Amino acid sequence: MITKGQRIFTIRGIPIEINYSWFLIVALVAWSLASHYFPGQVPGLAPRTYWGLGIVSALALFGSVLLHELGHSVVAQRNGIAIRGITLHIFGGIAKLSREADSPGVEFRIAVAGPAVSFALALGCLLLLRLPGWPEPAAALLGYLRFVNFAVAIFNLVPGFPLDGGRILRALLWWWRGDLQQATRVTGAIGGGFAFSLMFLGVVSFALGNAVQGIYFLFIGIFLKQAADASVQQVAWRQALQGITVGDVMAREVVTVDPDLTLARLADDLFWRHHFASFPVTEGGRVVALKVLRDHPRARWGEVRVREVMLPFGPDLQAGPREAALDAFARLSQNPLGRMAVVENGERLVGYLSVKDMLHILALRS
Image 1 (cartoon, one colour):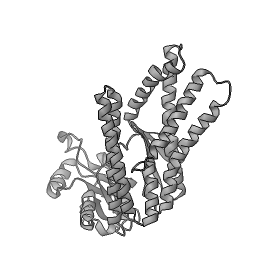
Image 2 (tube, rainbow, N blue to C red):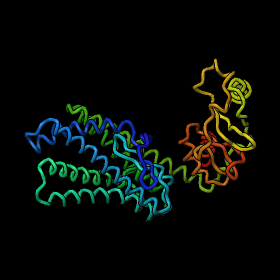
Image 3 (tube, helix red, strand yellow):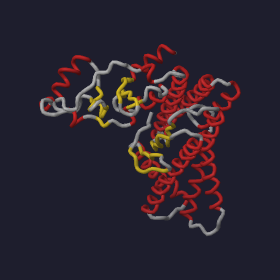
Image 4 (cartoon, rainbow, N blue to C red):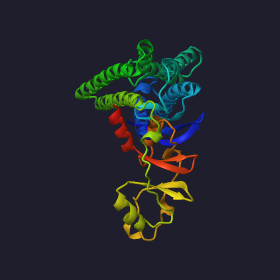
């Protein structure tokens, strides 16, 4: 799944990121609008004018997508769910919630917010178009934004996970039956069926000669299928880890590293002997960093010390022993090591947690 990007700014404390694939789709949308839509709507303009309208419209489209995701995010924040960020990418955008909703009502409100914003934007464009005096290019741009916001809202209301319609249906099934996992399986299956339909449509489009559209439908279908499967798996993990804390699953015997150790000693005395992929670095009894042995020329291992190349000890590399294992797992899967130090009172090392430990517990509990 496409979830990572380069941060460009922050809104309401939410990092807004752009994945590199976003530039490709913006260029394609701008080219399509400049080559076909605007010449058909407003004939007789200069090519540079069409390109200007195409670029502005493509950026406005993704501005609308961003507002859609902000709709989800603001409602989630108001219900006590932190947002790790919003990423714009080739298939649109995604708001990364720190955890699942605690109740069907919260799930429903978060899911409805995005389409509500898109419908509001479409309605706003419609009302603006009813005002007299718009130049033809501006009217064509507003007409495009009215259409795409309405289309975004309708597409997202398809009742299959992970689309908003699937989340709305899951909330209703969860409320009706009281079983989140079953509701997720049902909406995940519907979402998977919709994804296969898009893949089939992509193959047909490609066979009929529309290669760009065919490839896009094919890949968005694959993207939605992976997202649906991942969502079902995450809920299964949530059920399996219910009531489990980090202290229940962490390794308690931890090998630590002195920051003044050379990389040569680190390799000879620790990496080759213990076969671990990383070690916590401690100084004065406090964890100050985590260390992996990579991207450093072997010829300099005898000169370079751990202190010079260790990873800073930030929130993604630590957990508390009484923290819910599920919350720690969400951060663990995002950090660059797949491991984190378990510390008490913010500094005393009491254990070490790895993805392997978590997967072992999931296998046992499942």
